[in-house]
Length: 97
Image (cartoon, rainbow, N blue to C red; front, side, top):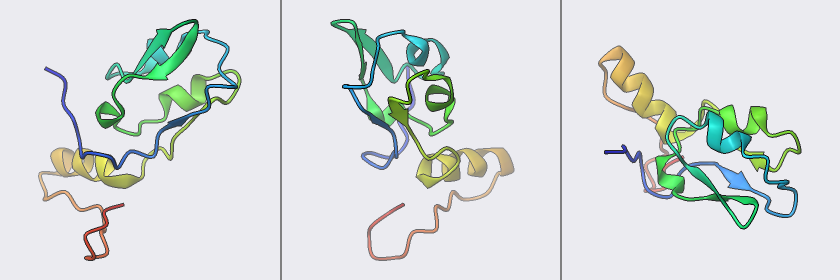
């Protein structure tokens, strides 16, 4: 079972026009966020993204971007690692990250 973090908060984006279909993003993503379809990468499930940044760092044409180490996914990971309550510094206005 794949773990989803928070719905619709990942900073991940893909510029399809830049993608050359090399598949590096599918190889390095630890949660299977990407797949190749019609010789291009597509985001299969953005909510699986933990914003680690491996995809963006390994994309040879900069088609993938993500603000690694920010957002609620990072907060959840740090919460698990430290045993504390996850806190993504939400402003309190129901808009997280």
